[in-house]
Length: 450
Image 1 (spheres, helix red, strand yellow):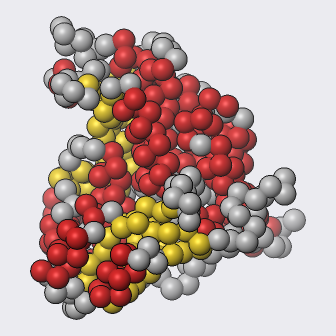
Image 2 (tube, rainbow, N blue to C red):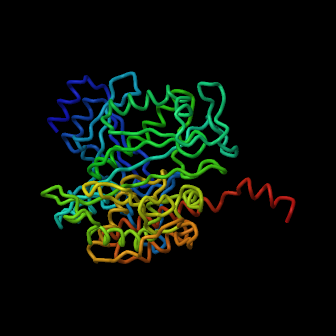
């Protein structure tokens, strides 16, 4: 805590945002004057209601059909413990403001098992016990769109510096990115101020769709950065009267936005990549990891595709996978193995959407690979050619995904029984809310025709 106090004092911070990611990846928490934050943190007085962890994306709260509460029936307080290693400036405010991520604990000191950071930490501890250290590198796609205040109206690309909206797809177009240079100058400045280690910016396949790659590293640090990055891009875009959206499928006739997760495993002591043997060939551990992803990823889709909109992205011939086949340098499969040196051997999980909570998506992906290694599973034969010619084996709706998720017993000790019940409760509540909405498609085609 002393280190954190010195950091705040040196930078003459006025306010501190205490951030906690909820299940949807939304930033919850409190904003305090810096001196009040220091006093509260010292006295363990930073508290939030436990129920924020079962809050839905609509602001409601997940129920439990079985009458067994996922959280305490009296909605007790949980205590925030600031992680001093995550403190950063908030660069888009005029007044000196800091933000810090928090872990959450009950009054008896036990961790809140349904908190996103704890779920990821739980998976990382399983790797650590076996002498393994996972390495990840997320890639996040997003769309820039015109400001839209009427949810009944479709989203459209924004006006660029040329004074015109993007009318066609400009995949990897340099001039198409330059149309929004003022936004990305702010994004890079904001990320540098926050020590968010982003790498490449490219224009993706959709109109005004972009992708930012992160440099590889520790999963918790990368999840923290991805969580903060999404907030950063939204704020940078709004400074220029543009929305940035991480919806999985925001525009009807454009490809969706993904969060590809590159992952590998190294020896904890030596740092050697365990996915390649001494002769540079794929190791048995690598193949078991791939096999674990093949077997279990369809079971964790509520964490990779967490919203009803998420499954609109997973369509053939749309830069998204429909199954969990694997192949080398093949972008049609769910599990792509990039061509690389043995030291950089990795697998790219292409299933997760940009709308996923980065902590939970990374935890889920690593959990599946871990189970494959622990169970010494064997993968299918890698495929050549298009995986779109093969069956669509991923869940097609959130209903189907929850059914698979709830029925997967091997995941329960890895992700946590209580957490899995919380996911089920929150997602069913969101589905119930969605079912009450009548869409414009229904009004268009059914109103006077049936």
